[in-house]
Image (tube, rainbow, N blue to C red; front, side, top):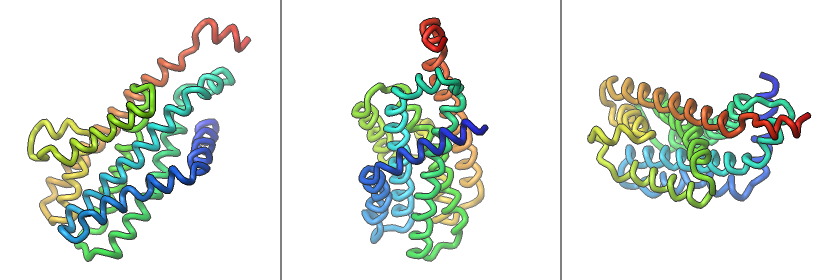
Length: 229
């Protein structure tokens, strides 16, 4: 556990040092929120949440790709793949939840909402899905540009696809729509339950697949063992 925390601290410090990138990504949810602010409350909040998802996923993508050069050396020094992946994920979730807290505060001060707790829950679930999603894209796509294009396409589909379609449930952020509908439109608890279940299933799947890919990528080969000796 101690090594996992050490990795999380290293990743957090590395990301925080990139002030310009962090600042630009942190402003994405605000831009999305303001774009729909004067039209419809529910839409503006959902847009802000999806903007947060993009920001956290992008951080995961860039962080995961940047780590591909250093993680093999950490592996040789005794770190297990599970410690490296879990530490990086904890750092991303921590940064994402801090950003979510800021925007939840802005929204709750700006809007008169009947279910503020549901808004907080929606943003928290969004972060829990977005962090491993970014890491998975980074694990599958070797370069930042291609990964960013894939992420933009995925977020664009989330905006454009009719959420009532069964195929929309295949998108990792479909839970965002259900939780947002429950929080803003004051619908029945079925929306809350579906959103939480979908978010939990997506988080588990994304974490499991990325952890498996990380383990395969960092498995010790014979030449690595010889170098360590």
